[in-house]
Length: 298
Image 1 (tube, rainbow, N blue to C red):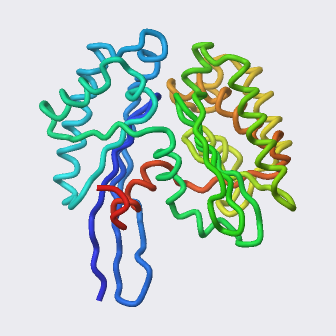
Image 2 (cartoon, rainbow, N blue to C red; image 1 turned 30 degrees about the vertical axis):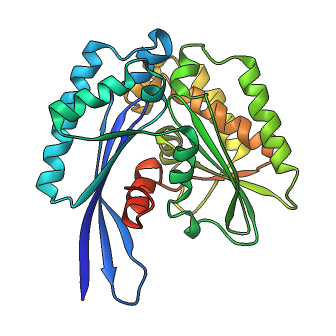
């Protein structure tokens, strides 16, 4: 006899907000299954406000409240038992981030936890990566967001080192990432990579790499090569913003940032010596659901 529980995760990022509703299927004597029931993405680019003015604008606060009211009603319709809302780099860096979180609680009855980069990396690392990670191999997991990128090295099936850097697609779009940040990331990746014997394989997550993978037409269990990623980067760079929307069918809020995401993944592969990148459909929201279910977060 199986039992199904409903959990939800809200990921308030720098480029968009997401609501994931998941079914947790329990059966005695077996590991629980985490199945996505619904994923809703709302393109509210908080990073555009915060990384240029240090504040979330009144317009986007109103949009966030409307979105959160919608999320709350959807969770009610789906019969969600427990939820967790996490905000990342944009809200934690906004001068009015805490104030906005309180306002949303008052207006939409959604409690928001503004998490640090390290916590974000730990939650992401708690996703179902075990089905992609082989115990005798080394991996670098890269999750590219709008305001920050989380890196986690895995060896022998365990997290060895994790670090969050203030580099993301919206920051790069606004030309507010200095060369020193790139140099710091390169130095860190090369330093940690040198500690491992054998080849390192990348695992990438985030909406942009998911889109690149979908466009490749490859089966889910097959990786993309470094040369393929490099070619796609060159190809997308040669297209105008309008051409990326019309020819590739990209959303308007994806077409302007996808090149910047590719640059981060491409450099991570180059600096770690990785020849391939796997793209499982997992991210922060998946990690929130799993961590919530196992009691790792409240």
